[in-house]
Length: 205
Image 1 (tube, rainbow, N blue to C red):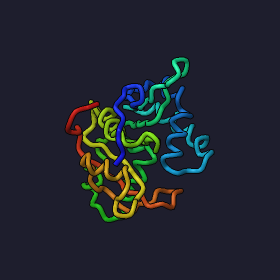
Image 2 (image 1 turned 135 degrees about the vertical axis):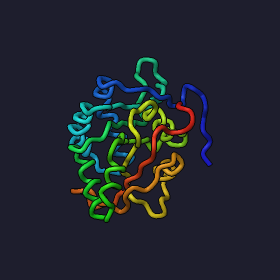
Image 3 (image 1 turned 135 degrees about the horizontal axis):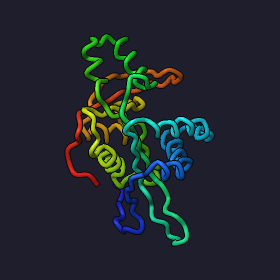
């Protein structure tokens, strides 16, 4: 079991990221995303325009975790990031999930209940080197604190026996199945769509 060091000088701390701050740290955030997801280097460049565009969607908000720098002349480094926004029918993710629910046999009223009023937790990533501090749960709770939506939804890659940190986090936070073994257009991997009612229970870090 990993021993977590609680020295404030070496423990990541959470910050709310304003749009200007998010743009300044965009490449840093994308590097975390690429490493955490195991994508090839260079994916950052193709994803950057989409992440910039997301900032203009209603209800957008972001949270980061910063590791204090040992050099007073250097800024603290970003080691985890999460962001999301209010879902809407014209958005690609919404349309994909709606079609997936319909094709899997969900009745219209069930589809509408799932996608009626939700916050999309679009990205939540922690550098492997910064795992073990409970950052995923802390980021999620802080990001969702005060969100004005009935539900929160997300998609995550399917994993055998749900055996990874992301799945354990989402189950611990009470996320339930909405759609399983779903393939988004342009991605051959199976994904799960999960959701739960808001607000989350428990304290916000």
